[in-house]
Amino acid sequence: MIVIDRDEDRPIYRQLADILRGQIVSGELQPGQFLPSQGRLAQEHGMGTDAARKALAVVRSEGLIVTVKGKGSFVRVPEPVTTVTIRAGESLVARMPSPAESRSLGITDGIPVLVITRANGEIETHPADGVRIEVKRGQTRT
Amino acid sequence: MIVIDRDEDRPIYRQLADILRGQIVSGELQPGQFLPSQGRLAQEHGMGTDAARKALAVVRSEGLIVTVKGKGSFVRVPEPVTTVTIRAGESLVARMPSPAESRSLGITDGIPVLVITRANGEIETHPADGVRIEVKRGQTRT
DNA sequence: AGAGATTTGTACGTATGTATG
DNA sequence: TCATACATACGTACAAATCTC
Image 1 (cartoon, rainbow over the protein chains, first blue to last red):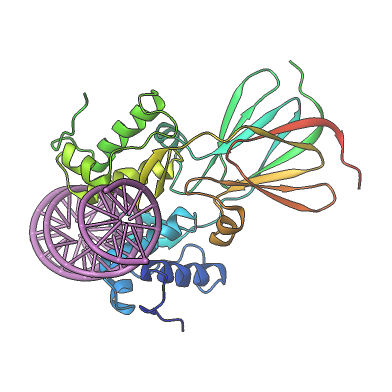
Image 2: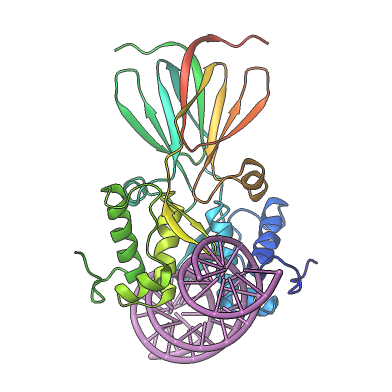
């Protein structure tokens, strides 16, 4: 087991974030599974609640976990992959959503948006989570 | 001037984040211009340093500011827009970068990455900042 | 080079509010 | 109602980076 080293030059909350990330990407923590509470993480790793909270915030900002107030943090269940098609003459950009967009699209922390400009000038905004953009042959008719 | 209202049901750090965001998008704060220090923000708005720091973190996570240790936070200067072309048979996804990707691409907080799968199977990873994806007619040769 | 001021970052503590079960 | 867990907000202290003199 990896332990926290206070003599390392990296902050302890980043060390804990690395541990949690490792457990998630390795599959030791499965999608949907709850992580220990902030207080328990702090206790188990010998740090203050503040540092444990920060570690969770790092992993959350990477889109790996979801935190629900009053319940806890669990490993994000991957969205089923949906495909969006674009064609010649169209374009897109990716960025972090504004607060208004986050609300209207129901986006959780750490999920960018894809903004597509269609050939007819219409704008489409998608949460990037689970969305794969595929380029199809042909051109959209106006 | 908008003031902080502690009786509002929204946390004061989000209220301050709204104020700062408004000043940036309205152009009152120009790109490259430094924001007041955390201590000054806290003092001016009658809150603790903690709340002012959190407000800056919110705006930073939206990609609006950059913070440099020992100096302060300034409004992000927009990257010049570069265009990346994709063609039929290719695909892309957008997501937040892993820490390793952040380092190797030199990505600041709040910037997603665009991962393009070329027709020949090669993978390209771009910081999404200032990148516009354009769909061109035709097909990549293998 | 060095000293000091400023500013951000980390880390701890406590208290209170709010959501969940 | 009660326990648990997360969120907000305050405080303190010290470390590290930057800048100026």
